[in-house]
Image 1 (spheres, rainbow, N blue to C red):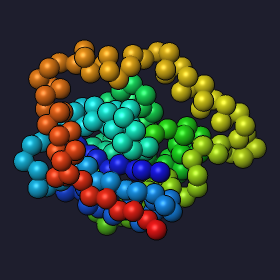
Image 2: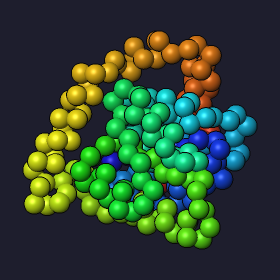
Image 3: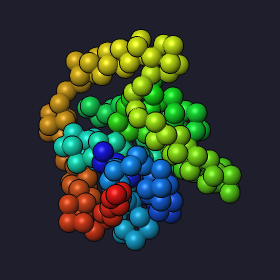
Length: 201
């Protein structure tokens, strides 16, 4: 499993904290890749621009799952769910993260990174990441309803395929100025200037 970490520039100060938490709690054997945005980057990216990159990373199978976020977490979740092929949950608490992983079995999670970040906020973020990766995804919950829950999540993915255009068509329709900026960040990712990886043994 390859897990990407990328969040809006407004929360660049929290990038390392997210990366460290994901690295600590990722499943054994997973590779965790940090795509930014970091404090060292000069260009600033909104949650909308980052959501496009989330869609590209998943569509091209650069990663299998993305941990992302913005100030509220809501905007990034909505923007990511507008991308072809992305099923993004919103996880303000460990319970939300666990239920999303088990019931919805999506490919991205959005965290609220600008709310309540005292010591308890940092502790909540780590516990949320821990809960997210505590068990293999898509097992269904509660266990007594697991078969139905798994079937429902697969039906949702099929409905989204029918109801959305392809990523290639989406990118062709996107405003050229926005796409140029997204390509700049993509090029940074490809060149490795914002990429850090941790491979578990």
